[in-house]
Amino acid sequence: MEKQKGDVGDTLADVSKAETKLNWNPKIKVNINKGLRKYIDWIEVTNENPRKVSKSGG
Image 1 (tube, rainbow, N blue to C red):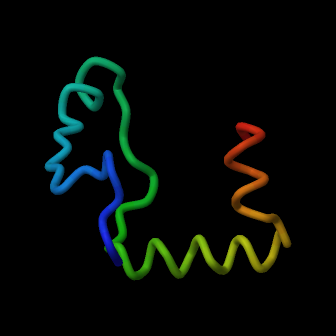
Image 2: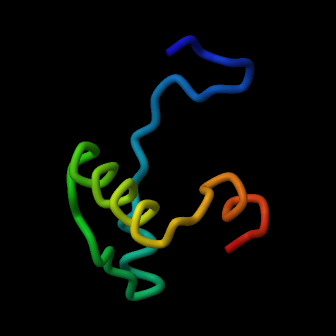
């Protein structure tokens, strides 16, 4: 896919501060392929339009 203006090249998010300060623990730790598959399955089950969901904030 071609990059667009403003795209982030790489990111190495460190969530350790959120884990420590907020006692936050990610509920789902999956690789990108499994995560996308779960998202696609959810979209199919809920029959939601992802653009509508993201624009409405929920």
